[in-house]
Length: 221
Image (cartoon, rainbow, N blue to C red; front, side):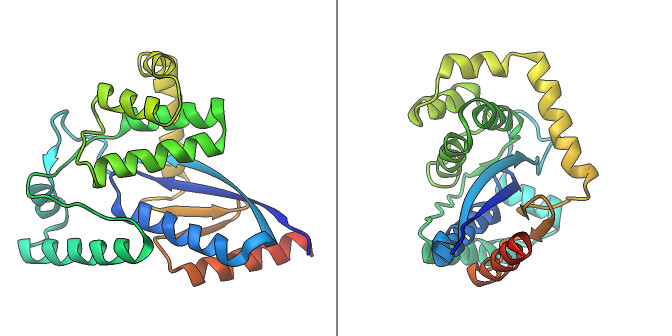
């Protein structure tokens, strides 16, 4: 069987719980298809809250303001996320004081990691940021927190600091963000296979398997 080099672009935000769930479902799907494909994953930036204040906002207040959800609805949604995450091997730790933050600096570092170190390093950093936010309740808008995480995954914090202070990089990442909005993406995760086949949302693994096999068949036809 010929393995297809499968290009996978994932547009997501590090404070989006469905983004880590979507990735876990994708990961499960890739295990299911085995050596039918050789996945090449690239993460792309999306800001759920581009105008978020530097100090962030309590999640309870944010969800009520942005989505009009009641406290009961929010609690039910968090429980659903926790149950789904547990089934997929990712534990959400929602505490009463948890806040949501702006993630532009995180996206600067993720873009830099992908551009200079490749997809595997970028994925390590992305997963570490998900863990830092959803499990360790860390402020992923804080430069020192971000650079600590950069070091933890084997990347150079000094190079990361230089990126965060580079106005050219800032402009580049903002253009990258705008690109995906111009492509019509208004919610994440959005997963694009072979640059052509968009799957929105955190689908079940079986859905991803079906898409991957159809993409592979078309590419090898």
